[in-house]
Image 1 (tube, rainbow, N blue to C red):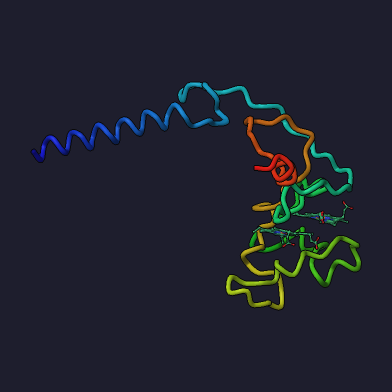
Image 2: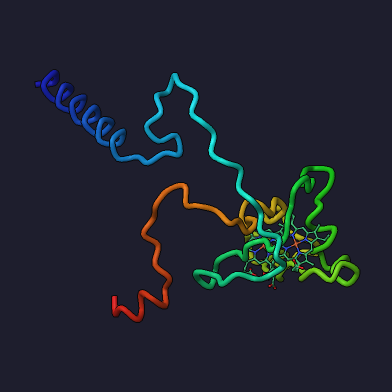
Length: 148
Ligand code: HEC
Ligand code: HEC
C-alpha cells in the first residue's frame, strides 16, 4: 500500500512539473538551455520630462527622464540628491511622497525609509518599447465601463 501511495505521489509531482514547464512563458522563449540566445535590441529611454497616465492609482509613477549611470548603493543615492526633501528646492524635482518616509509600522521617519531606498525596485524609466511578453492587462476604468 505504502509503495502504491508513494508512486502515486511521485506521478503527481512529475505531472505537475511537466505541466509547469509547458505553461511558463520566459524571456528566453524557445531557446535551448545550452544555446546562447540573440540578445534583444537595447531599449531607448524616452527622456521627455512628461508624466504618463498611471494604469491604476497605486502604480509607482514611471520615470520621465534618463537614469543612465545613476549610482544607487550603500554609499550614495543619486535619485535622492534631487528627490529628497532637502534637495528638491534646488533641483525642482518632485519630492518623494510622504509614504516614502513611513516604516513598515506606518510610523513617519526623519528620512526616506530603507524600504524605499532602492528606487528602481518600483520606478522604471519610460521606454519606447515593444512588449517582451504579451499580457491581457485592462485599465480599471475600461474594466468598470465593461461592467465586469
Ligand atoms: C538631476 C536631478 C534628478 C535626479 C538625479 C533624478 N531625478 Fe527624477 N526627476 C527630476 C525632475 C526635475 C523631475 C520632474 C520631471 C522632469 O523634469 O523630468 C523628475 C521626475 C521623476 C519622477 C516622476 C514623478 C511623477 O510624479 O510623475 C520619478 C518617478 C522620478 N523622477 C524618479 C527618479 C529616480 C528613481 C531617480 C534615480 C534613479 C531619479 N528620479 C533621479 C530630477 C531628478
Ligand atoms: C516599494 C516601492 C517604491 C520604492 C522602493 C520607491 N517608490 Fe517612489 N513611489 C511608489 C509609489 C507606489 C508611488 C505613488 C504613491 C505614493 O506616492 O506613495 C511613488 C511615488 C513617487 C514619486 C511621486 C511623488 C508625488 O508626490 O507625486 C516620486 C518622485 C518618487 N516616488 C520617487 C522615488 C525615489 C527617488 C525613490 C528612491 C529613493 C522611490 N521613489 C522609491 C513606490 C516606490
